Image (cartoon, rainbow, N blue to C red; front, side, top):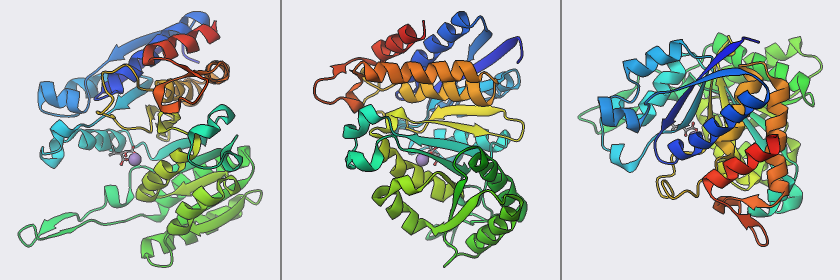
Length: 357
Ligand code: IPM
Ligand code: MN
């Protein structure tokens, strides 16, 4: 563990600033309670950076990243930026950040708290205490494949889904290792009945499985996986898949947990440097109202403690504090149900901090 840790916060757009503000309060509280020396820096990113610099990922922010041990990101995007050129869109800044730092491992835990099982449209018997991890490849596939673009006077457009064996190996290796630490069950999701790139994905994962005799590997087509995630989610433990499939499946899976406002994520490179962010977007419709759920952002910080800062005990304590607050019946609007106490974004942050003490 390093003595001094620098956390760079990129609040971004929409509800991003509100939820990261609560995470910052939590970072300060954890730092004080556990006598850590955590420095917090902020920088502009996404639409907020477009407003000031005309660029979603400005030089100033890149420089601050160099001095940081972990990055906590809010959310990016908003209607105002939808008509900008592709390079200037907030989302392009996010993709550039992932690519620049080579964050090929995206960890999306799908954890359903028993207390929230009636916030989901899925019957609680299927989802209560659900605990799945989706490992999404984050810097390859259709999102980044070349060639891409428009042709014939913009009447045609094309993208390329491309993976090399080594790209498939490094992400599945991570998934195998994680499976070994969990229940030993790994499901690799592809579309090998149609796509060559998926056939390579499947054969590469199969070959790698020889190194992991204790992991029970299965393969599933992505359309079936989408259905199975809703119909019988508890059959899954670790799921590994390519970039676009992982994007789509993780949104589907978020429905199982009651609210996308609960779900954190970590994006890591080979050195365990990471960007930690909620799975939810900038939610402009509820921004500025003090009703956004800060739990995804706070749990993202818990993931930073665990994966980049080597502070497992502190991460456990923070996750437990979230659990305790839910047990006490505190709810933001997105997870409110009858008989529970509705609280604002900042009151939720305060309640979690009070459980840490
Ligand atoms: C996500 C988001 C991003 C993605 C967008 C904002 C570019 O949906 O992190 O899941 O598609 O990866
Ligand atoms: Mn997404």
